[in-house]
Image (tube, protein in one colour):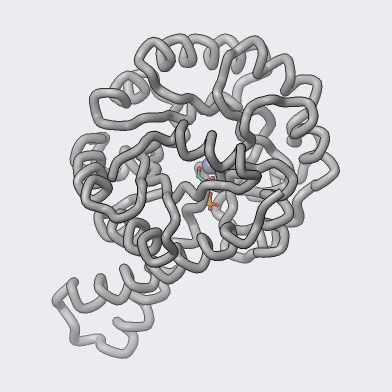
Length: 285
Ligand code: G3H
Ligand code: ZN
């Protein structure tokens, strides 16, 4: 059944565990995430990013409606989250499109502007009962920016600044830059666990890890034990999807029916989801 992101993250944070939030681009992503969650017996978040909406010709509703339809029929609780929203026009579509939560991303702006924009987004979201996440620091790797940005000096989230940002903006959760980076295709990220510990002590809202595809299993478990309550994963699904399609088409260059390779792609993504949920299920504070 459909549930809310706020409920899943609150429960995970109270239990010292984390809820996984997977980025979906196609209907096959949606079906794979829900099938993987059902096989692991774990709740899950389906998240649609602003970039995914751009890919869908700027239309949020077709994928959102499909995600809601699959979520409603699922055997495990599933929430819908709108991810990395920069556009106010998109933000304003969230509630009517069935999302229970949004991540408002103004982290590219200088601190004062990030705070002002985020506070306005929080006021708007809370007035509609939406749970809202924001980001402070530079996680990097979005929109072609090099993943190594995440390791540049000043890119990490500062605990004192984060405490003020959370208090002054009123956000429900904070995405923190602790060494992960978006769109990594190798699982080689090294997280700053000492910084995570300081952030977790300084903040009383759940912390979110972005760019989790590049984080090895043991680092992921340590991050959950250190206070991460929502784990965002996108690229790992695309690695599984594209690998399955590439292998099939290399072996069957004559194939034309997309169902032949999309079935394999969906199964590969389902395995990735189930494996990730098992890893997270074995981690807790
Ligand atoms: O918000 C989305 C996540 O941060 C996904 O990052 O594609 O590197 O796993 P990833
Ligand atoms: Zn992200």
